[in-house]
Amino acid sequence: MKLHNLKDNTQQVSFVEAVKTGLGREQGVFFPIKLEKIESSFSEGIDALLDLDFVSRSSIILSHLIGDELPKDTVAQMVKNAFNFDVKLVEVEDNVHCLELFHGPTLAFKDFGGRFMAECLATFNKEGKTTILTATSGDTGAAVAHAFYKKENIDVVILYPKGKVSLAQQKLFTTLGENIHCYAIDGCFDDCQAMVKQAFLDNELKESLGLNSANSINISRLVAQVCYYFEAIAQLPKEKRAKAHISVPSGNFGNVCAAMIGSVIGLPVNKLSATTNQNDTVPRFITNKEWAPVDTKESLSNAMDVSRPNNWARVQTMLDNNWFSYDNFYSQTVDEAQTQVVMKEVYKKGYIAEPHTAIAYEGLKRDMADDGVGIFLSTAHPAKFKESVEDILNIELDMPQPLADALAKPCLAQDLENDYQALREAVLAKLA
Image (cartoon, rainbow, N blue to C red; front, side):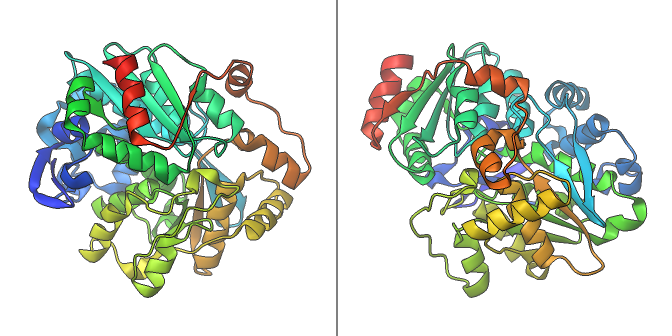
């Protein structure tokens, strides 16, 4: 896979280099220069690919995307190690399905990308120290922390906005200790993300700690997420696949970017919705073609509280190059009041949707054609948002064991002001 920096096209790297580098010059993200149809490396065709089991199919997809940099049997073992849990497609109503991505160890879709990235770095970094520095608005922190927990020669530094991540989400990564170091930043997610970007411009820090990022900035996480979209379509009846419309709850826009990559290489998906909460930078851009981020607003769907999404550059590249048509791409905003209304509506249909899932459902219902077949994503287990779900739906949720165990442990995070120098001093004192 040959990739280039979307802010500096002269910086071209291999997949291995992109994974190890994380972020390019001028804080640019890496993206493939070209995406080939999967039939070019899997001649049996899409239907035959969809007939395979999830792990076998994912090995073929990732080998296709990565190219000849890694042997196919190496990729197959990495996938087998990373994707050792279920992906479920649940019918909620006629022709409307929920893709449940919360059956991994931290009960969120980030387990796919986090675990595959850990396999990549374990394969690439046989020697030398690596420090993973990442910001989280909720689920990334847990997935990355558990994926890299006790990995040799790897430390993880996680920044999260203090008081703006659910307690269940927070406890899954702030209670581990060992090589996992967490900082509660006095600010919002965009502030945390800005500090991560600044760290990658600090050459002294980069070199002394061997910095890498595990946000959806990192291409290894992004390509891993492509795989579950193929699994979603594979679980639909064959006669319905051509009319598939997928709605993705969108904050940093990595998840919908993965869906679009899937479509470009041959995934039979007809339309995509990237549905946001009240942080509506992209919906406004789609309407008026002006990029005008405003201050981030707190919401029930906190993992989507992002007003400057890093992955939009990748999505826009595919749209502007007509790899995916603007005509088949939708982005709308769902406000706080409507989120609660939709949660209640979905519950009446016999399904429990936490806020992010409800937003994806609402986007799908607004955008889907009458004869379409809809898939909306559930990116986290409802119990990760226990307080809001129970309050809005007036129910009591069962607590999954991983969450119950984490909630019983003390938080080991350190409070930190929203200041890059304070972060720099803290991590150098601990890790250098």
